[in-house]
Structures are given as structure tokens and as C-alpha cells.
Image (cartoon, rainbow, N blue to C red; front, top):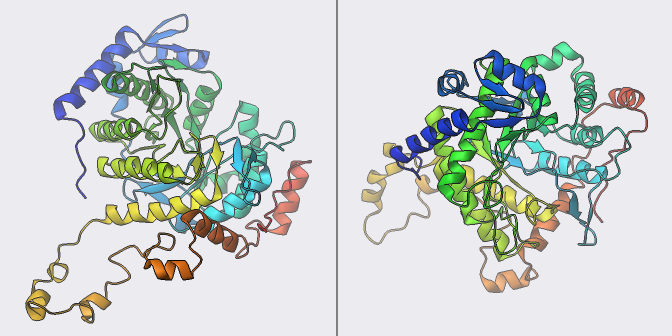
Length: 478
């Protein structure tokens, strides 16, 4: 598949040059002292918390970034490497709230919800990776991330993306991962957690805790990548071009730091760039400008020869309505055509604040459509079918041709949710909308293949190691 070029080559190079100028003359505020020391050791200028990166240093270290990134799973059949396996579809993550699947009302998310979501993602074919979709309001003190990771491990074999708070929290989840893998050595041979942070906070600042975690996982050789989050008009220039220049500088600074920690560390040019609605300051993750920014950043990633991805196909809508559909569809298709490799697309509404089960199922069907589009068009002689066209001739029918029968289930996406029936048939089936059809599928999935994916023996050991841990049980939706 050939990708659309949203920017001209001259514009790509101007963004790169502007970013180098920003890093060299403005630099970043770096709050984490070991990061400042790492920058200084490798030729950067440090004055208090301000770090300036000479262009020759940036050019040297950014070229060390590998061209691929692998997401490992507990079951290796779910391993995915980008860009080879793109588009890799990932749930959007860390929403504090959820639409209760029984009452339909919004409430705080809990660990039991994560168990349900993990099982849902494990069963839906369009998703490649589970980035833990919500927080857990019932997490005991000192077990914030454990309360999210445990139910995810219990019901999902696909790659898991996780974010921790401080280093103590990091060590606790690694202890759990080692136990699930059968030991630290076994885990490091096939690390099924991918760690994600936003160490560079726009504008041009590196925090303490996320930067510490990124440096730790890079030094350990474990999968980790950062996301840049410029918000035009609030934390970056209101102009698209200015946000591209600043955001690109923030990516380069973080990527360079990772290579300074350990040369050859895989990373992703990952973005959650938006343009604020300046009437209210609203965070517009569903805006078309969000899609435009991601298309441009994807083109920058190809300039640097690193895989890319980000939070795209999102919505500001509070419902699975027309707004949700067009916001998700327009930016997601733009990202695909622009060459994005990873899509954090699934399940969230209301500007990333709320998880909705029906939206996750709808997004699964969108994901399958994106993968079909990426597969492109086969131009073999058989597919071009000139011989068949000659045989059928004017006025003929292709419906019974072997060529048709052999491709009828593979050439086009066989949608399960999108309604294509005649109105009379749709009415006989109950005149349901896509929200109702999606929730029906959710309830069906919650009653099948529900055996935990952690053995009772291992579960007992985990509960002994982490006393007071949440139950993490999968409950049906009635």
C-alpha cells in the first residue's frame, strides 16, 4: 500500500530543521536529575533544569533508533511487530469512568470492569493489543496498577500495555509479571508487557516519574515507548505547523534520551496531538485536526525510519451516535492512509474519559475494515480477471462463477454489526440500532470462553504475594 503524503518533502525538512533549532536554542526543562546527567554525559548543555541539545548530538542518537518495534504476548501467536504487521489495533486507555453495561449510566470504573474488558478484547478479532482501558476505583492502597494488571492478565493473552506511577509501583508489577512467566529470566526472553509513558510534557518539559520509568525500562532492555501530547492553543502553538515543530522536537528529545541510556532501544513515534477548541478550551480528540496532525507525524516518522502510532479514531461524543461515527471514521482512515502503524482507537468516548462496551465492539468492526483497506488490491492476473470478463461477456452474470465463490468471504469485510438488510427485514429483526446490536454481542461474549487464563495454582501464589488484592472476577452482564 502506498501512503498519502500530507506534507511535501520541503515541509518535512523544515519541521526537522525547526525542531533542531528549538532543541539547540530553547531546549527542555528536565526535572529528573539522572536524565540531566545522562544528557550532559553525552554532550548536551545543562544549566540548572534547562537542557539544550546540540543538533549534532540529536542527529547522532536519533539515527540509532531501530526501524521496528515488537509487542510480545503471553501466547506468541499474538505477537505483533510494526510496521510489518500494521495496522496494530490497540484499545485507548486509562479512562476513569465507564458506561455501566446494565444501567447505561456513567460511573467510576472498577477492577471487575477491567476483567470484562480484557475478556472482550481477547475474544474480538480486530484487536491486537489490550492497553488497560480504565482505572480501578476499588484499588486498595498501594496496589493502584496491580489492581489493573491482575484482571488483565487473568483474562487476556494478547500483548498488554501498562503504565505505572512511581518506581515502587513499577517493581511490584514486574514481580507479578515474573511470577506469571515462571521467573525473571523466562519473562525477559518473551516480555509480554509493553510499558508506556508520557515523559515529555508539553511544552518542552520532562517530568520526574515517567522519565525515571522510561530510563529504567530502556536500561533493562524491556519494551517501552513514550507518547508526545501537544495541544495546539494551550500547550503548543495554535498553528498546525508550530505544533508539528514543537511536538517533533519533544519526540526527538525523548528518543535521543532513550538511545543515550541504551543504544538500539526500540521506540515508537507515538502521538496524542490535538487542537483545543478555543471557545471553551475543550480537549478535542475527535477533531479532524487531530487526524491531520497524526498524518503529519506519521510522515515525520518515516523521515526518521521509526514506526509510529497514537491515539486516533477518538470522539468527543458522549454516545454511540453519528458524531462518534464520523469522528472515529474520518481520523482513523486518515491515519491509515497517512501510514500510521499503531492505532489506540478502541472503546473510549467523551474525549478519552469514559469506556463504553458497545463502542469497543463497534471499533472492532472498524478495525477489521482498516485492516482490509491496508491489505490493498492484488493485481495478479487471476485478480485482474481479464479472462473471466471475456468469458462472461456483455450482459452476463458473475454470481455463480468460481472466481466469485472463491473470493466472496475474503475480498470484502463480512460485517457483523453494520446493517445492510432491506428495511422490511431490518424491521422484522426488531429495528435495532448499532448500539443495541453491539451490546447484544457484548453479552454473548461475556458468557463464552470465560475460564480464567491463569491457573488456580498460580492464582493462589499471586494472592499470597499480593495480600488484599482485588478479586478480578469476570461477571456476566445480565
